[in-house]
Amino acid sequence: MSTLKAPNGKLISVLLLVFLGILLIACYPGNPQSTFDATGPVARSQLALFWVIFWAAAFVFVVVEGVLVYAAFKYRRKPGDGDPHQTHGNTKLEIGWTILPSIVLVFVAVPTVITIFDNANSPDPEGALQVDVVGEQWWWEFNYPDPTDPDNTLVTANELHIPVDEVVNLTLDSNDVLHSFWIPKIAGKVDLVPNNLNTMWIMGEEEGTFFAQCAEFCGESHALMRFWVIVETREEFDAWLASERADAIEPTDPLAQQGKAIFEGPQAQCWSCHTIKGSVRAQGKIGPDLTHVGRRTHIASGIRENTQEKFDGVDL
Ligand SMILES: [Cu+2]
Image (cartoon, rainbow, N blue to C red; front, side, top):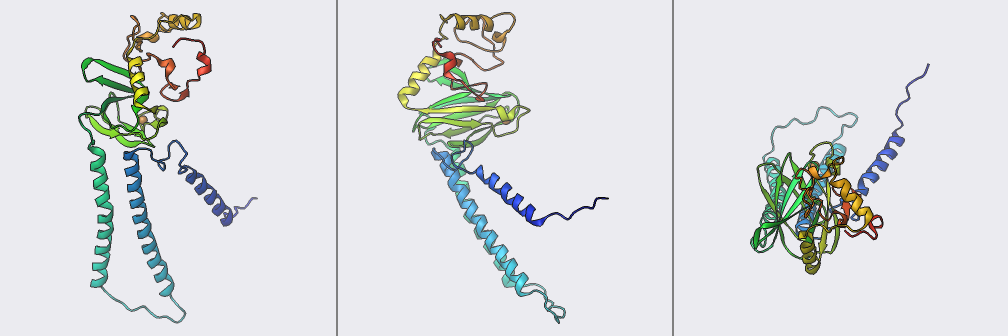
């Protein structure tokens, strides 16, 4: 006969502490999904707001728990105590606990409303670079309209290039279900809602490659719906834009030629879903535009690194 043992309190405490430690690792600023090292004004304003709310909540916690613990000890029942003095109502106390939370709420509400409006209204609504984002199950389409030619919009996918220290205005739309646009270190989060165009603005202040992720559960591959943001100098950005607008290079390498034949062939039928600019056959619109896909830092909606070694010597 086995007997049930009482749970070991110490063991549970240690396990809880370990679990808390693991949870706190997520706050480490170097983590790609941590928002604690903001590198743009939008993410920084959101981080500042987080700290205001955090300290307001910490203040409330300490005051409430302090009063609770003090009262529990000071007025605890002692041997020989009879029934406590019976009382009803305390006007001063009731006014106090109405006014004090109101002050805390105003303290939180004012910076919250200011941040909401600052993030919603672009500092440069007309002149800045415009990118139209479309969420799809489960990838991202980025459209760069040409202000001088409405027919010359660049359509690309899963890699958002932006010039450093410049305002970028985004429109956010969805072709299927709800998604959410989130670049943890630069800006977020704004939902992409079918039939309801949302807008936001972003700015990257540090050159580099930044992780981004859909932040609204959108189906079974939601966790894989990632993209990368490349913040680069204006010159690099202009060069990228010009080269992306160009048709795909006709492959000369035998391996790349073989790949092209498979892509446009009757068996794989990649062409029926994907567009390759310059290809007569590959003009599919269901999947991401794959023109110049070999140049992207990541493939498969940002989930796999595009290792350059594999493409050495191949004209992309
Ligand atoms: Cu999603």
